[in-house]
Image (tube, rainbow, N blue to C red):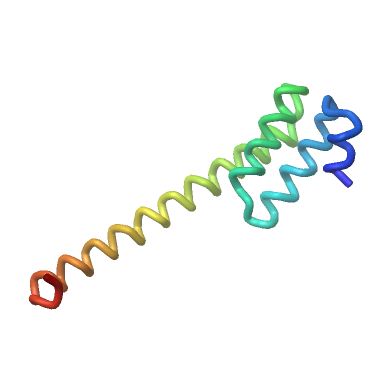
Length: 88
């Protein structure tokens, strides 16, 4: 429904907000940020979009930090394996 609203009236900030909110709720953080930014471009004082964009950016930051932690763990594991002679 929100995607159709955007097609019919691309200046409809609430449609971008609703789609961004939906995308964020399904874990699609980057596309959610894009839609929420579009909503704010059309209506800079859209308070719900401002709050949801902050939530989305916070979620993205957590995702990046979790990824960095996984990479660090993999590097540490590989180093231990090298130290034990298990990798060449």
